[in-house]
Length: 228
Image (tube, rainbow, N blue to C red; front, top):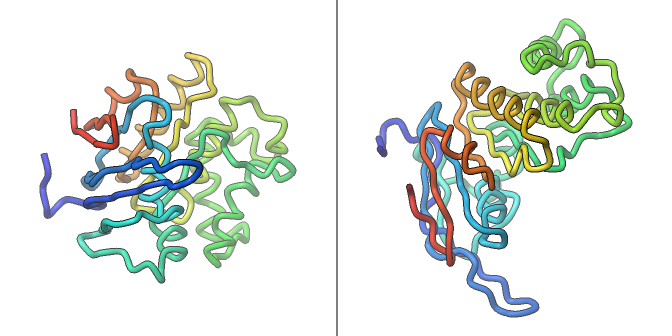
């Protein structure tokens, strides 16, 4: 149930139309919200616009119309890059890790982008170690990312998303390429870490069992988003 005093992030009347190679009205007055510390899933058929929604929510793509709110205030477009770095953590299906970097460096580079110290005594360095420990990956911290299994890469991606202490995590099919056992572990770690750290989560997934583990669920069909 929506509690205006507790809403962290909200999208209002988001519309998106693609005109090439043909006109497709993909998103039609999409509205959703996530409360502080809540997990929300979005499901729907392939091509229905799930990833597009997430890209717009994460300010990586622009809507044709509609508004985004954080802490009850409309997001100013001129500050989107700053908002992404400070307030939003991203988890991608293909992980987007830097293969030639170590596991630890893949986390620390996020802090560097935020112009934070990454010395061994720094808060960011200690946070990175703590996050890797929570993902059962501390023993892999000096491994090159390219040497990891798919499940390990997914867990590194989750840990990286929590760097810079964002309020909201956006996850796009975070377990889509994993087998059942690895997917179940990653889902549990993601949900439990969000809960333990008090973060809000919006996840796009084809996995209906994963969707049911979230606090609330939406489904998108024919351009419309409906809460389940």
